[in-house]
Image 1 (tube, rainbow, N blue to C red):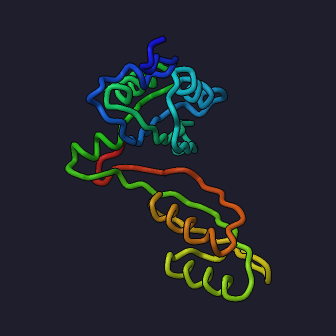
Image 2: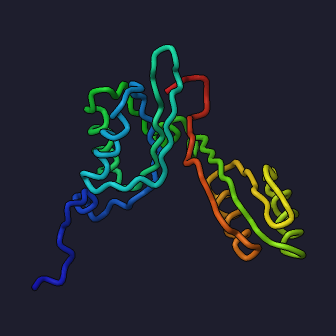
Length: 190
């Protein structure tokens, strides 16, 4: 039997060997109607693409339009394929690869932020240290009693990850994250 990797149903095996996977943030403008999100997500799962982060909300109430922000990982070829397939879904109005657009505008990345709620339980020195570190990270205490804190923290994904890692030894209990919200700098819209 051949010891080489055999292709699966995933599109990641289609990529040229010289291309390296990278994270990209896609912004998708869609009609706000039942089933649209399921169709978009179905495109990813049906082709073996992974979603690292997903956020969706109605952003233009009068027009009933929602913005879906997706962070996904793939080679440039796979990412271009994802974008073209998203554009073919009927209620999709526009697909913008914010990562590519940021590069075209001379920027490293689009503006990306995430919100997390982080529950930490502890007493004594652990409690004092958790509160001190939360202040250093500019996290807000949104709930507290003598046994726990719930912190609200907003920032880049790396900041959220670092805060969570620091809270683990101090009594991290639970984390809830919103996913990435993103847009490009400058006066133009998507």
